[in-house]
Length: 276
Picture (cartoon, rainbow, N blue to C red):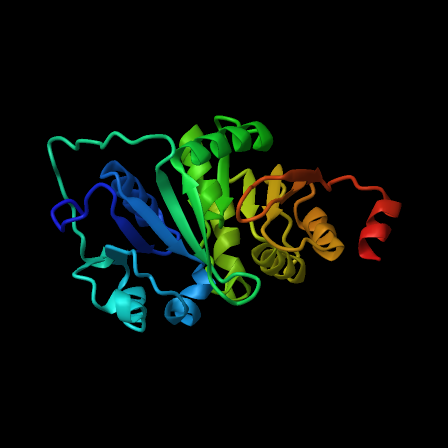
């Protein structure tokens, strides 16, 4: 990235799906003192033309997303476009990590916005450090944990505390089209004991498991949020993961988590109130 001309203070649009390469890219961008800019995965194809992107200095992405970026006139003009699929093994004796102030931008996120007009959320390095600390206190990590995850910012927290993350083989543009059989095989083959996933992905997994009489007793903790969690899903989770503590995390783009609820043993009357 340094050889391609990315430098301290640059804003780099990262169009890399949730993968090991995403986190390698993110750490590289930060090491250079640049800001990583993201779009919601489901918003990349439909929303690329809705934002000016007049402050972006470079793009890092896969072939498909770099092609989509040409829809936007400002992105089309950029000279620095790095295809993640074409970066081979690279060795350097020493990487000098830039010194940054706590209040400098680490991540800018372009979201679809509730009105359909894009909005930008900024996270500083200090914000991420504080968020990581709060998540560590909230989510009760154990050194031996192996987590199946579909949520990028929480996986960053996992990297921070040092637990193993298995990135779910989900369809991140449309979680409802994910292949549940693949993810269940990931759970089994990696001896995963916890899941951090959006309700949409958990619905796909539990529907498949119930249909095929699959019970996953090894999962002891499930965290979900980022969308509405209905009573129907809670009941399915209890059936498929009988030994799991199920926790819903509530937050917003600007602050997450705000609140958490252990829904494992909600009383019948509480469930009825929620349903109503």
